[in-house]
Image (tube, rainbow, N blue to C red; front, top):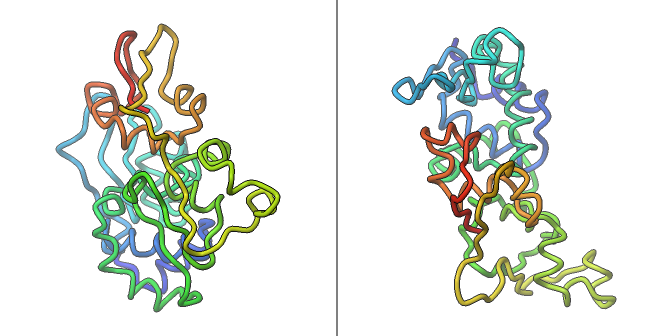
Length: 244
């Protein structure tokens, strides 16, 4: 079924997306499926574990979840309301929109005007960019907060505090008050990239959490560990190196 832009906006809102995230989510739907609830993609990428991408948000299905009602249940995600709810859960788990290739490639931006037309927001609001795209430093823009900047770049607020202690001092009301034009460090000024070696029992999720990173940020830094051979990050081996 082909949905109108207003129908897409309704499902996205009911799914839990708000503010600027709602606009970006609508644009991603338009980029991913053109608003078709029956869209099926990534059929050439199916494996014993992963199925095709389904529905409005083109959620990659897991074969083990088929018929279970899980977030990546192929059958469930043909329903647009369910698809939007599941997409919002994936968004929250990742901390941003990096699970969608149309976001990381920037192709969703073509549809932002259409998205704004059905979900208008304050015109001064800014939109997120792919994790790490801003490099090692982020320049604060009007209306931004440190928590929002951390989320945008796939970092925890605690990690941002470690990198920028001056922005969390009394003069900044411990991070509650930052000013447009201030510079926020996104990585340590080390000579080379930080790395850890996977030990027996390690998972990428635990490694990301231990180092104040989102799993989406770890995926951006280590795409080879999330390929089909690694079952999308579910299977890593002792001795492999993880870049931080």
